[in-house]
Image 1 (cartoon, rainbow, N blue to C red):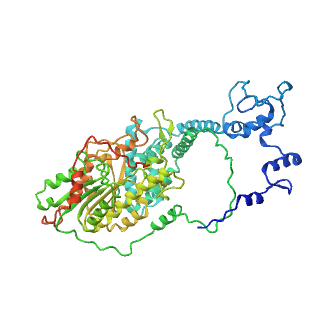
Image 2 (cartoon, rainbow, N blue to C red):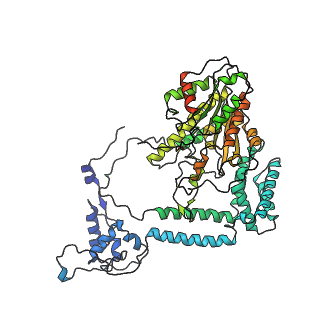
Length: 612
């Protein structure tokens, strides 16, 4: 690529500064300023705020008005920020050194005047935001925007039951519409015989805390997108909802302003030289990802791949990819328990392997040796069961939430790296964030790459990831073009959403499964814990230990591991397999030995570790 660039000499000869009041031009900005002052009486804007030798921003005495003017022109001291648009303009004054100080070089600036300093523009904005938040809180008190439904448990439970009934009635309609949803739910709120805004707050509570538990039936899935549009249109008509949204926006702005450094950027000494236009435009592949992803979401499979039968002879494998550290009663444990408890002879030919760098550094999926072995085993139909949970830290909806400290003040947390329409990364990220995105995306795509040949050869596949958030602008792997393509028509892969807290998770974490060749939804329903209570704490922000609360969701609870193992076992136990196969090769045996070691004291590793 050839660039045509002007030389410094050419730039100085061609660059001119034109006067706004006449046709004169000058080679420097300083000469233009002298011309404008002498002929057109144009003064620097700062001079209209200088009426004495005292700076009105910091109250220090500079002995002459000329030095005050110089002081205000330096933006780093923030004095100009304090007085600009906050103090009225006046005629410029001129104060010179008294005769007895004439000839003294650079007298030090001293503060002779006392009193509070004017606030900076940022401080004024913070004050205005706090006043607006206080006013908003007062308005919300009258409209039940901040009322907690948990204080009236009986009313809350009654309203939730009514909303679930209304939702069932909506799905029962032959062709449900948004108008039908409005009619059913507004009638439901009016039937409670309480204040309208209080009923609206109960509806908001149901949407935010209860609707995420809803798992649609097969015939209801087609209406889920319409349901999201319908309840959002109802929320937009409710004043408590608009007040709560406005409060979140103001709180986020206040958090940003309070954490910003109150220092103006130092002006660059050497201004960049002007350049001529490039000969041709530069293709920006990163910026084109949004358009390319939109095209991928319209893809269709014209010709379905041919399904193949699982080989009858071993050896066979059950792989848990991105398994985390080995621990008691994990998926590996439950899978081995089911295999060893079976009386079928072929189970001796099945090897369970957990793969993760937290177990051993050699288990890096980017390793050519490991990746080649996995891909070859998948294409040969040797992987009977495949469980994986790609890292979700770059996809997490928690990045979009306002985090508060123990006192309720907003604090800064990890910023969003993806959006729904920019699912592979937003623009303007740092190098560290781009590396973090790269790791998360590569691990997801490699896992999906293995899912396809395993499912096509009859193996049971289960991919776990957070369920798509209710907010349409937030990212989810289930909104990407590749997942949408594989789920389309449901001929091979299917999707199921459930609540992990019903299986012992410490927080509320709506989860979706991308699965094939197994009955995991039925198993989850059968083995769900009956005595467990729904957690009240959401996995947002940091705990008292300083760690993010999402850390507890990195490892599956015992009951969920058991459900995954049973779903895989029920599938493979019905296959016509024989035990007279070949033995695992040395590499597979080495992996099996490494993954068989349980180390309860081993710490979890972060999803992303920056390298030097």
